[in-house]
Length: 133
Image (tube, rainbow, N blue to C red; front, side, top):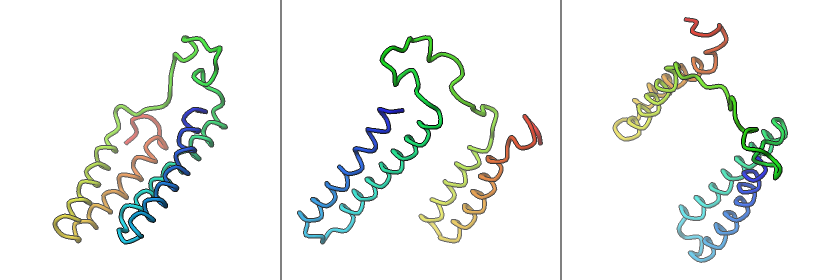
């Protein structure tokens, strides 16, 4: 994950610098542009930190080494839940939250409650074993 870490880590100061230059060019009168660039820099920094943290824990992948062979990248790449319904419930909760912002703010509270249930269900999905109900 060395390449990905460097990419996002180098993007953070770039976006912060571009946001500052943009702020000076518009004389800080347009608050959305420079704030969006600052937030994009913060997001790139968070992703870079996460990739650096995960890269130290996982170690070098075959993609990170110049002498790696193609067959070293084969096999299981992670743990996925193809039968899980919780991502669908979380997507419905997000749709309900956005609907609440568009139509009536009280609907957002329903979306937040549904999102809390979906997140708890998704996190604790394997705490009782595979396919446990």
